[in-house]
Image 1 (cartoon, helix red, strand yellow):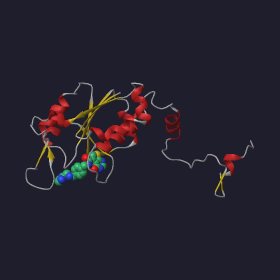
Image 2: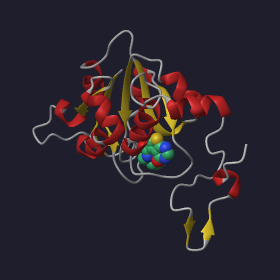
Image 3: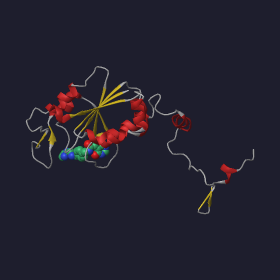
Image 4: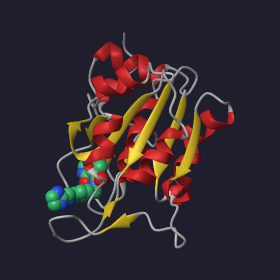
Length: 196
Ligand code: 21W
């Protein structure tokens, strides 16, 4: 799966290049391509945002820079997603659905968001990760990448994914490992007895 990420903060994605997703990246199962929206500014100071028409606090990302960044990665078979607080909340069914795509383009907003006209032009699917306020779409994009990656063939050794479909639950029972007694608390007998 190819994942293009349009962002003003590509350096925020360094941690996701480690661990499970990182290993999948090394094996070329998942190819994460970070695009810095700022690289598409035509301004001599590399400016990408401006004050909102109608007033209000904060800054809005200009439509032209986002459009040019998008055009640099756009492909007919790609699915484009805009991470936005106004989007539909991500859930496990959506995660499974997205894992079947061959190419995702993720657009991360920051500040007060992106000019609405380029959003209408691109017409992406809008996804939120929950009802709380973050400073941008970068952490949500990483949440999406992490959750979707688990379902991409070859990323996990399949065991945890299979067990999930089986029980069709995310968190079903408490887990235990050694030692058998920890601070006077015993592992439940049902898990340690060898009786048939
Ligand atoms: C937070 C952008 C609040 C815009 C006036 C009228 C992406 C996110 C984000 C952010 C606002 C997600 C406005 C859960 C999140 C994200 C930054 C509102 C706009 N001003 N999922 N309208 N939570 N957050 N300001 O924050 O980009 S997915």
